[in-house]
Structures are given as structure tokens and as C-alpha cells.
Image: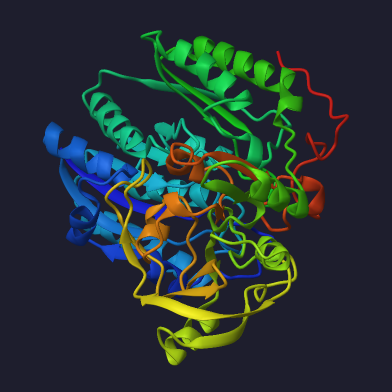
Amino acid sequence: MRIFLAMLSHETNTFSNVPTDRAQFEARDLSYGGEIVETYRGTGTCLGGMIAAAERLGMALLPSVAASASPAGLVTRDIYQHVKQRMLTDLRAAGRLDGVLLDLHGAMVPEGVDDGEGDIITAVRQAVGPDVPIAVTLDFHGNLGEGMIAGADLLHGYKTYPHVDMAERGVEAAERLTQVIAGRLKPTAAWRKPPLMPPLGRQGTTRGPMRRLYDLADEMERDPKVISVSLFAGFPYADIPDAGLGIYVVTDDDKALAERLADRLARVAWEHRHEFIHTALPVKDAVANALAADGRPIVLADMADNTGGGAAGDGTEILRELLRVGARSATVACIWDAAAVQACVKAGVGASVTLDVGGKVDDRHGAPVRMTGVVRTLSDGRFIHRGPMMNGLPGRLGATAVLDANDIKVILISYRWQTLDPEMIRFVGIDPLREKILVVKSTIHYRAAFEPIAKEIIEVDAPGLSSSNLARFEYRRVRRPIFPLDPDTVYEPD
Ligand SMILES: [Zn+2]
């Protein structure tokens, strides 16, 4: 079996003024050909799962391009066209193919294209013709759209948030693709988009409304006629018509069953829509509660400054409050401020510096904070993910410095990355278990690795572009009415 393999992954926050250009991809991943297999083999990623399954199933993989960048603003036209053309050129050169495996996101918005994945899948379908099956893995935050469904035979969305099942979905996509190639499955899909746009903070799948929906989906998947059920919570910070919850059911040649199950899921999601409303503590109360709490570490989740949701990663409001109250034994992980890192590098380890830290990207993550502290450590920012997410995958934070102001330590990084792994704190020489307060910039993902070590978790309502308070955003393009932006939205599922 000759299987084409490619990855293009970006979650686009259209409210961000940070363009996602070639440099942003180069900072994370922009690789080609056989190098892709070497990088991802054995990792907890979709590609890792696809590669493992391919080797087991005797597929000959034809790897083309793997491109991903930290979530931020629109993907620039040139890098998007570059990756797309590379895929199409490699497809033309590939000769006869039995199938295509794509690892995409679902919430990518290139300049001038609302539905990036729909555009890619459509182009790949045109290149391979109608008879070569295409299986795609998509992020749980994908904003499901018609282009994706029309062009692909199989979509496999992650079923977890925190995303701990990426490798599993990669394996599943490869295995199902083999069955389609062998003529043993005939994928027949139904999909629904109820007018519902869940904020990030209530999308977690360990509890709450998404758990309820996935319990139901798991039950549906026990039917041998059901190939898979994907529930996309959607990405509410991409202001495009398709933003919001998506339901996708694929059966083995049973259209009526797919439609019936999709209807049922849409109805249950809608009935429980109010459970998606999220509230968090104001900064002052959150810090006061953390200081008063027993034990350690107390995790303060800066949910709205999640670079994984396209926020700047340089939000300062919690740091400002920690400094104001004179907290001790606190670590802020991390603040994206390459200029501050360079000032620390110039001063050297052990030097005292006064810097304006963070708050520089825009006016939506707090103002810069003037801070005097000692440069504790400097590093090249390379670490290995050791938590349940992306286990084994190398991480790159670029030049990294720890600035310590009377035991409030700020990890300053040069590449944006979400605080989803305590290793990001450990590798700079700070033991997360010994800190009283850990500030993490993450909405939900941090829970996979931090819940087991945290004495307590406090969700904070600081400003930022991944805020779960959707009233903070000026929507122009999302379809209306939609809940919760329009609380009186009417929807009558079948
Ligand atoms: Zn996601």
C-alpha cells in the first residue's frame, strides 16, 4: 500500500495581531520527506500514531511536508501557498497511490481563506481524483465545515481535551483507511452544526458538557455499523462563519443511522448549552486565595493568555498582582518576551537588571511590568515533553531566562508555547513541587500534567485573547444568532 502522508496544523486566532508567517512555522516545525518520519516516530502525536500503524500494517509511506506553528493570527498567504503547493507537487510526483493520510487542525484561517482545511482537502481530492480514499485527523478545536466533509472519506477528531489521544486517533485513521482501501468499509457521514459556540474554559472532556456528549458518542461507537463519532468543540476565537460546535458521525454505509445519531447528539448538546458558560475569579481574588491556601503548589491558571489559543503569552496582570502583594515562592511560566530575554543574556547569570516585562504584543494582555531582579539561569530553551501530552516530543522555547525578583521567578521565553508540561519549569532549574504558586498560561491542557501534582487549581479571569468571556470580543463574521453571544437563540433539532 502506497500512502501519501502530510501534516499542516495551525489554530488561528483572528483577533490576534501576530501574523503566523514562515518564521513562526520554522520556529516549530517545517520539515520535508523522510525527516518527518524520523522526527515523529514514537511520539504522542497523530503523525506518531500514523507512522506506528503504517509500519505495523505494511504501508509504504510517502511523507511530503509537516508544518505547524504556535497558534496566533492569520496564516500569511506565502507560507500557506508554499505548504499547499509542496503537497500538490509531491502528490503529482508520487505516482499511483492507494490512500492519503493528512494530519490537519480544523481551525486554520489563512489570509483570504476562511476554511483552510476545507481548501487543503479539496485541493488534495482534486489531485488524487475521486477513487483514492483520504483519511484526516483533526483537532478537537476544529471548526467543522463543508469543504472538509465533502473532500475526505474519513475525519477523525481528537476525543479529549486536554488532547491526550492524538496518537490513538492517528492509529485509528490509518487502520480505517486500510479497511476502506480493502473495500471492507464504505464511510457514510452525517454532520450537524447547532448554533452553539462553547468558550474554551468549559470544553474540557474530563467533566462537564463535553464529557456528557462523549459518553454518549462512546456508547454509539459500540454499534459495529458506526465507524466513528467526532465532536468538535470548535474554536471560538476564529471569527469565521463556521466557528463553533461540530458533530460528525460516520457509519459503514448506513446514512439513516448516521443522520439519526447526529441529530441525537445535536439535541443533547443544545439541551445542555447553559453548562458551557464559564466563570473564573478576578485576578486580585485569585492571588489572595492562592496565598491563603494550604499546601503547595497552588496553580493559578491564566486561562485567557493561552498561546495555545492564540493569545499573546505575554500577559502581565497576575505577575503585577504577585509583585504588588509581595508574594514569595512563586513562578510565572512563562512570559513571551524575546527582548527581555536578550537583556538578561547581555547582563549574564547573577546580574541584577531592571526590565519592562511582557505586555508588549497588544493592549489586550495588560501593560508591561517594570521589574528588578536577578538573572538566575539562561538556556537554549530545549526540553523534552514528559507529560501525558506530546510525550517524548522535543520542545523549543528559544533563548530562555529566569528573572527572579525576591522569589517571584519569571520564565522569559523567545518562542511562544503553552504551559502544558511541568518540564517547562523543571528544565530551567525550578522544582514545581516546591513552589507555593505556579502561574501557568493555559486554558485546559495544563490539567493533564498539573492536576496530579497541584494541591489546588484556581482559574483566573485575567484579560487575553483566549478569554472564556466571549463578550470581550467584537465578532463580525460568525453566523448569528449563536449561543452564548445571543442568549435567546432558538434551535429546534429534529
Ligand atoms: Zn486543540
